[in-house]
Image (tube, rainbow, N blue to C red; front, top):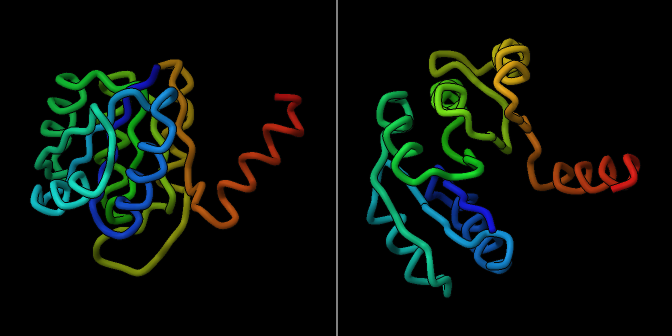
Length: 155
C-alpha cells in the first residue's frame, strides 16, 4: 500500500518502526535511515517485516535526503530525528513532492527555542505542491489529537 521513510534511529525511531511494521497492509515497505546505519540495522533485526531496509543518511544535507527519497519513492517521510533537522528534511520533501510528518517542532541548533514559525513558513509552498506536512504530532497527545480531528471531520 504505502512506502515510508523513517528518519531517526533513536528511541522514538525504534517505536515508530515497530508500530509501522505492525500494519503491513498500510506500510508495505519501510526504510529506516539515520547517521548511524548500525543503529538502524539493530532496530531492523528486532522487527518482523518482509520489506524493511536501512540506510545511512545525513539528514542535515538536503541533497542526500533528496537522493534517498528519489531512490526509495516513499509516500511519506516520518521525521523523528533531531529537531534542528526538520527544515532540511522538509526542504527535501518539498523538492521531491513527498508528504512529511514530524513529532516535534523545529529548534535551531544554536539556541533552545522551540516554535513553529520556521515550519509554518512552508505552508504555502507545501499547499502549492499538493503535499501535506503534519507538524509536531507527537505521541501523547499528538496521535490522540489526530484521531479526534479525523472523527470531528467525519472520517
